[in-house]
Image (cartoon, rainbow, N blue to C red; front, side, top):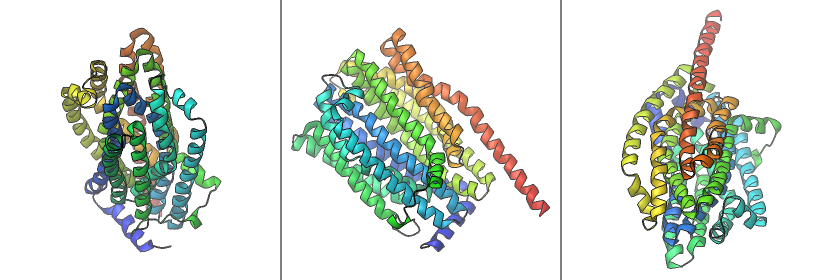
Length: 461
């Protein structure tokens, strides 16, 4: 097993270093990475917005497919990554190597399937995702190249998480950041200089995703990380069962996010392209704002996984409460600032369309009001997922994106019109927060009991 000594050192650091310092060291690259990842879609939306409201809405429509691709990558990335962190904590290095290769290669295979099926059914897929007659030509142009990028895009999410769960967030940050910077540079070049329009934005994204994938794959070969090797590809019932346990919550959350975006676009389309464009911009802005929170939580996950695998439950709990306190303060500050400057944020995208600004301003301000609740929800979901409690973690993911959001969308919109579209996500956030409280408290109490059981067993020995 190559790099065994390096992994021994890393395992010791993860279960001995002060959790506050350790989380911050791991979280900073993850936060940068998540913020930069959000720039992929933010950049396309920003530059395409100059082409008109329908073009802006097209990017929002195709975002549903990008969420599906992300769901695939995160399913294998979180599924294999959670397992790997526990195995590294228990010093089972060979199993960690096999799981890493199996997770990455499985993602590439799944991405190729999406590409083939998507291109065959290109136009029906664009319509299904919510394209109106005026949006459809732009959506098809953008969708084609996003489909070509699907294997690399999905695999990038997987590789990034494999690195992160090994405590190597820095290498993931480098790969994703390089791709995002390239995307921001290529967007105006292809759109305005080469006059390629929406198609140019999609090509820029495709090239950037290929570059990110290549850099992330190279990062896996560097000191202390598990190298992805075809010889370690070991598909088995056990491997996919473990991926299912660790990746199901991410799959549920992101797949339902895609479904929700599709239904949201279809319902919003009844009120015109401006409403679709406004909700698309709101989605991008809130995703960008939440990415810092998710990145900080991702600094918690490897600490949680390593220490849970090493049965250091006291460190898991200490890490959880530290993260919760930090995120609560940060989200309250973000809510105040975001609420005040909401109109200016919308104007940066579509300052010439009054309807987009008016619709988006109320929707975004409603989203800001529930932002402080997301810290607890996301941290509880991450903790449950990392310690292998797939069912409650999946239930929490299903609640926010499906159990509450979709019924609210279809119940509120017929009575409230556009306001029903604007308020459905904040309402779902509140309901999800309510059910996340007992789930989180139960998991923390169970760790207390496990700690006492370990002490009793040690005293008997």
